[in-house]
Image 1: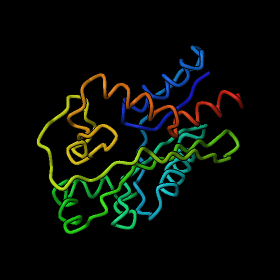
Image 2: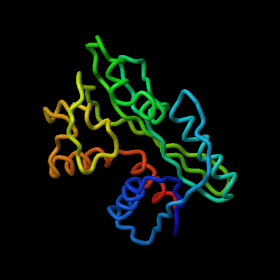
Image 3: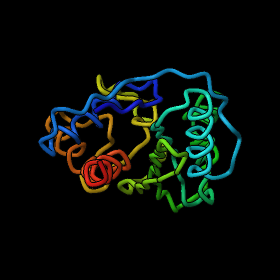
Image 4: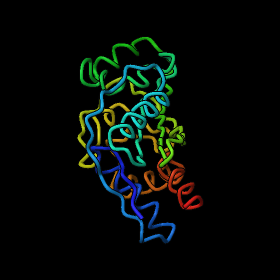
Amino acid sequence: MEIDFITSNKGKIAALKRSFLNAGRFDIKVNQVQADIVEPQLNNIADVSKYKAMEAFKILKKPILVEDGGLVIEALNGFPGPYTKYVLSTIGIDGILKLMNGENNRAAKFVSFATFVGNDGTVCQFERFGDNFEIAYERKNVIHPDAWSDLWQVMYMKDYGKMLCEFSKQELSDFTERSQTSGSLQQFAKWFLEKY
């Protein structure tokens, strides 16, 4: 059995494979597929994920999986949300900190949606609201070797009393394991195993 996953992120591929392996399924192959899909400018992460999955399905004409996510900052009414990638590539971390200037509410989280389109075009979505954290008042100039984004330099993890970029390998492993058990990809894997 195979699943075609539209992503350029090898970490997402590894997370999905790990979910199947943890369920004792060694027979499911996860293919990393590239597709030229325009990133839609929609105001909702779920809609972005669904749009991209449907476009990929139209192009490839076979079942497909897509995952999209974004940073949601409470004081900014959920911004940047689906615009996270664009915001990071334009104003960056320092721009986000400027937007947060004077805000006492620093609460933030990541939201992700895995969207699967089946053989018949039926769309199934799986949502995850990530662990809450706070946007720091200033950037911590520490580069973690496993960081997937500069955001790690402003993500204050209250439960740990430190920035994500300051996590030890063990702390990161514990945090990742805990947060990925309920992730959108893990929810998809559980559903997929029950259905197929």
